[in-house]
Amino acid sequence: MSFRTPLGRVRGLGSAKDGTHHWWAQRLTAIALVPLTVWFVVSILMLAGAERTAISEWLANPVTAGLLVMLIVATFHHGQLGLQVVIEDYVHTEAWKIGLIVFVKFAALLFGGIGIVSVLKLAFAG
Image (cartoon, rainbow, N blue to C red):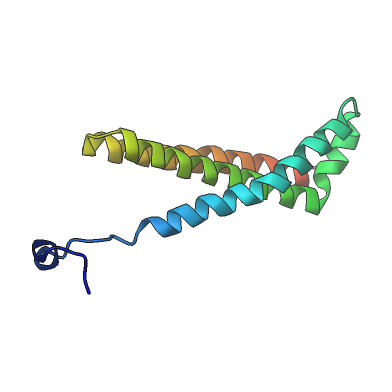
């Protein structure tokens, strides 16, 4: 039994089955951000007032650098996904919608890449 109209069946219209991946990606990045953010905030609070050498040693630890890179990736990917949903829902001109989505994706890649390179540079400077 099909719930599609005869015209919809002829035109091939129906569920795009496209939003599930986006929805899951946003939920998974949100779940990943909870422990990563808690770890980061606690680490920064523990390093408050520390000497530069202590912070450099903390950053030189491969676990710390890896967690910081994961935090950066998850943050920018989650933000990009959320902004894409907002743009898709509230921008009605197709050209503006596509342009803004491309801009947001490139901005997330640019700033995420800068963050990752910065962490790696600091981690391997020691």
